Amino acid sequence: MRIREDQVYEIAGIGFGPSNLSLAIAVREHPSNIPERPVTAVFFERQPEFGWHRNMLLPDVTMQVSFLKDLVTFRNPVSRFGFVSYLHQAGRLPRFVNNQDFFPTRAEFHDYLEWAQACFADQVCYGSEVVAIGRPSGDGPAGCLRLEVRDAAGAVRVVHARNVVISTGLVPRMPEGVKRDDRVWHSSEFLERFNGADRHELKNVAVVGGGQSAAEMTRFLYDELPHAQIHSIVPSYGYSLADDTPFANRVFDPEAVDHYYFATPQTRDDFWRCHRNTNYSVVDSDVIRDLYRRWYGEGVRNTSRLRFLNLTRLTGVKRAGSETRVVLHSLLDDEIQELSVDAVACGTGYDAMDPVHLLGDLDRHCLRDDSGQLRVSRDYRVLTTPELSCGIYLQGGTEHSHGLSSSLLSNIALRSGEITDSIIHGLPDPGR
Image (cartoon, rainbow, N blue to C red):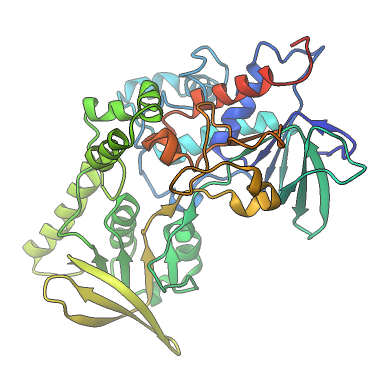
């Protein structure tokens, strides 16, 4: 799209994954966004094209949330951007209904997201990374923020906006002291690395982690590499089951956001203590059973290609020429062993989005709580000193203030609607 550097946009979205895509839809559908007074919005995405966890689109892997927790339905059930509308346009609605399943494959849901984002090509700059946010220079427009945007060629341009909505996604987490390379992978790059490797040379592969991604990669590698030894390095005694039962799932309901936000510190701690097993370091039952059946079947056939190293942590990776050795610490007997592998895939999760590196000098105007976390209002706006009147909103990085669903799909439709309402009600045009 063509950016007008002389224009002050009312909204600039940083990142264009599902959250800011949902925001773009909410802005388009807002009653105040009319042709006579359009709400101007632009989005910047550093990827060259739309993509959401592309490297974990493994065959037949299903979503962990209902298709009704799409980009819009909880906010606007009759939106033309809902998953059901996508199915209807694709000609698959009757077949999907006949499947009697609330959980589409991850590949189909990704196709839905691509279908929706195609309607916003005139608002999104791909291959564009926002590298800094600040105040306008002396001759710049007042009442707005200055964004420095770097394109794929390295050129930097300046864009001004009254509000920014930061949704840069989660940050891949590796085991301490371990760095990624062509043989040491994180789940966020898994398929790209796997497809770029010579499968015949992958004879010993280790998978690190006890959560959903690690279990899915273990199953995939076992099925795709019938000649290879697969070593699953699990820090617990075995995979823990994700609690997706109806009452536990209420922790992701919209009203749970209010309960968490307005709760006492003790109640917030109880939320995490009691309900971490709904999402963190846990695995769906079907994946656990699939892996157990494969492991058990090997015992029947007197083979041993799938090996589980339970209560074991990876503490380092050694490289010597073409050889890669992982250093393992057994929590059972405190022994240290080394294992020679051709590749190691880390399903070790992500850290929450941290916008501090973008804010630069603006950070001194952002208020923080007693633990040093950004203070965020209920409508996801960062609380600031009076000197900074422009809006800085967060889509992610609010687990400390808004609870367990902050990094998940469950509430993005309502969250985007709340952010849109907050921004539009705060715009200076009195006619809105």
